Length: 239
Image (cartoon, rainbow, N blue to C red):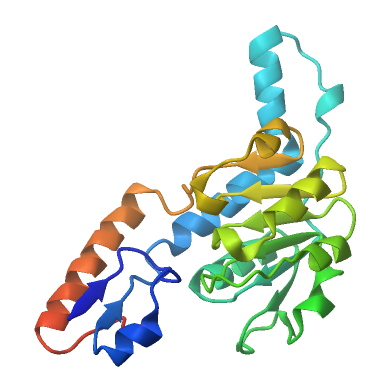
């Protein structure tokens, strides 16, 4: 018996029950590492540079005015990462290249130079940007933790939708205290309130992984997983 997940995340599968029933479950790790990491900074730069608003303004009005579109640099900001797996590590490398101070929270300490926090609550208050790269399904940014983020911080979620308390995040955005970049939404529904926040949010319909190159890797690894299972030597087993 076999379940092959055509993705990296598998939080919707009860792997414990599958194991009890002797069902092998596999996933596809690391196929979209570059795609997601690049998209994180595409969206982050879009937000801090106000380039989207400037583009829309000049197309709609034809005017050459820059007063409304003063941006900010990433250099020198503190970039907190939740989950330093394949994607989280690549995001850390890019953030470091921008001159950002990278800190992270993960289940285990990694062999990297970035500062490790064993307790997420200790890291929260230090982040100018906090980016979630865990597929565990845990609610990392609870209502209480969102209130601990510094004013004007940026929340980035390219992990699982449930990683952030969406109701509380909307309230923080609505108040103007936080900004957000969201690629994963609860139940795949983009709420009206979020669509109304134009200046302090960047929204996308789960396209972080969606590049030509990553989809080729996704299909190939999935096929390889099935072949290995049929050969009696399963790979990428999650249970």
